[in-house]
Length: 515
Image (cartoon, rainbow, N blue to C red; front, side, top):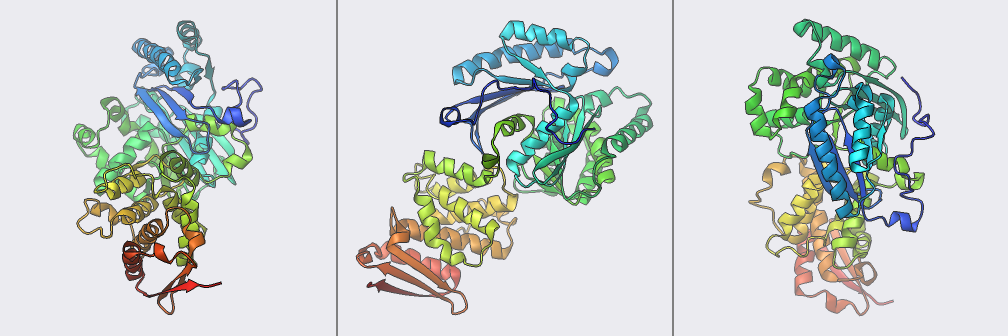
């Protein structure tokens, strides 16, 4: 076990270049990262060095390098062949995408196998790639930093499971604290002697050792790794959950326990086909589920959350200065979307200022959703007018966004739907609406219709041409037009203003400011 994460070796410099040091560095168009794990080899290319980078390319090969490692102490020969072939491909692709040189990190299988150094040298000769083999506590630190990329204020314990190891790291106050590693990866658990009782005893002993320095009943347990995501997807299937985005999916201890029991008594092949899980991954799920049941029983977290961000995102977070780390990943992603996809970049902030008086009592969390919606409100303009509302909804609910709970995704989706369509009756998205409380649904509709009116009223500066005043107790909505802007309040704008008032349940008045 280690304490703070700053005790890494001096030589640990995976990028060999500063990603965020100056304007030229920040203008990098592509950043490529490869993770050589015990079960899979994955390359991710991020589109730019930013607080919330987009995923330009993402490919994974299930090589199972660590299969049989506990028996032979050597990497799987077939796994070596497949991993080398994948890395050769990745190196060529990175050149074509402008993402070279790749940053390559190897974890448990490569560090534990006696032929790990030999295979590392073979890869470097064949591809020219430099490989950083990191220890378990460094793996835990980077995974925890990946979680911080998506949740800047994350508090709790991060659990990262790979093929041959499992790591824990404590997050508190935006800092990675205690961390440790264990051989609890599913590939190794298949070789534990003693049958079911022996495996159960071994898992229990390892979890007690690994979790001993960690706080009990943390506010949240963050799950990182493919096996955890597969279990979460099965939890969704059992519950009939309508939104299959895994990032920020939340589970309770009770629900998870029911799902684990359900997996143990179900036909795993049938479950695999229903959820689209690969055969290689599904073979590891029963072992991972047994570990997770013991871990949750020991730690007793108040909430369990799935993170799609891990080591690869942690490597980017590694290079970020403090001021960039502190930014809201949701707002940064929405700003990027507006800059690249909207007709009038910068209009989103003016629209936000114009409609904010309707939400005077909103706290910071609600205001960030309002701002995000305003930044995204025009990013689907290239879609066919009859389908813009659907494109907006799907983008908000399915996009790879950090810092956004599932109900918040649907809130954004409904508000953007109403930006382009007055009614949601008969929508094919109705099953997802159940994730919102009635009052949240009403507020999302109000937000959408406010954006719909503001965007129609003026294409450039609604906040300087008019002012909205909302009097909830009097149930009144007032529009004050600047002198000379009266003509902007035409028939269509008037109809949309009336629709907004109806959603608010208020009467309207319009006047012109003469001074």
